[in-house]
Image (cartoon, rainbow, N blue to C red; front, side, top):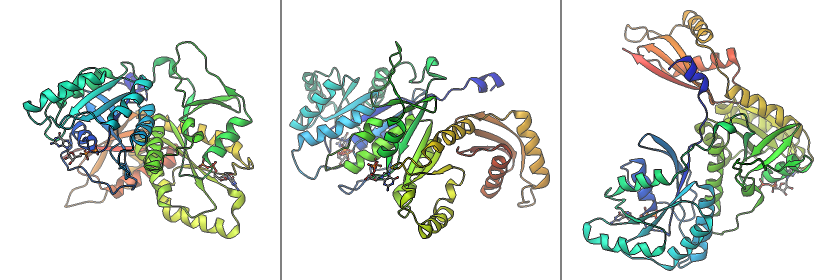
Length: 445
Ligand code: GDP
Ligand code: GDP
């Protein structure tokens, strides 16, 4: 890679494909097929939230995100409206939709309900007539033409039959240009406010947006997702991602949590920086940690806002410090602010912290500086000798920004502990507060 290529790398947001349909048509099986995984589908306990709902997929060199809506189960039977309501949220978040029907049982009421939602959404739809395990069932798939959704793709998610054609059709249905086009580079930064329910996300959004001018984007040709809001904070305009999801309470009884988590994942994927809101007055929970982990895994800049500071007393604050040291040590690199969204206290500290995190997220270290630094730490702290050999970092280069990703070329295998040490020193040297840092190793034996 030349220096030039490195310099022009952008953070393209991969398009999102939602797989929808009524229960048991084979959505999860199809998602596994798309991902090329062979493992059996994990059967979820009804009503239990699945951790991961979106996955990175690759077909013919094109990257996209697959959203699996197979994780919720309807406990009541025949709840066509409920199924449609839930599919609606997934569809709203997606760039294209794969609508799965079971060719062996034909079209049912619940399918029809989803079809109506699909028509209204005007999103590109690829119709998958599933469970066509053999040529005999193909005639059943052909009957699906009358759904009015175009060609039914006969597939067997279970055995893989027809899945290549389906994937080709999915790619064709996706918008050709990446979401972030050239015009959008230098446009408003994308911020997601995420966190578990009741931590104060909508209060924070209101405080930020309410007292500032809400900017209406009417520049011709720009695509503003109506779920987003452009908000001016201290003279800078930010795009707050999926504010519709924050403002609008999802009321569906079944799958509520599941869809909240789906929205959270969607928002994280689309954002450049995530503000994870945590209720400082309550103990930090698993759910908080899961959201933080999602942000880290997605490689987004991270700002933790400890909210409801007005409700904390001396004792709680001492305990919180301990929780941060014990449970949040993995996120010690994040930016942090203590705020009260309700009263507005220190909400003004958010914007500088967001900008700092974004700046570090996009930071580029020249190969010269990086190698001077690597040379120094290798000389001062060589890797321990293993089996008579001395593994060594030979040189490194920053392959990407957003988040900073470094490739280290080494002789011998570098141990995880040493890599952590290198990361720590890298952070001290160049300041990567608020951003994950990825280290990849290319070892030469
Ligand atoms: P979901 O509820 O829509 O996510 O459906 P699942 O993926 O959990 O599949 C429901 C059931 O249908 C499971 O028992 C699958 O093994 C089965 N199934 C999925 N795809 C196929 C297929 O192509 N052929 C056959 N025969 N069974 C399938
Ligand atoms: P969301 O579900 O994360 O969007 O949370 P909300 O913004 O709806 O807030 C949940 C509850 O916490 C509401 O009753 C808010 O009034 C309250 N709340 C939010 N921020 C604060 C705060 O800074 N201090 C206090 N005391 N209450 C707050």
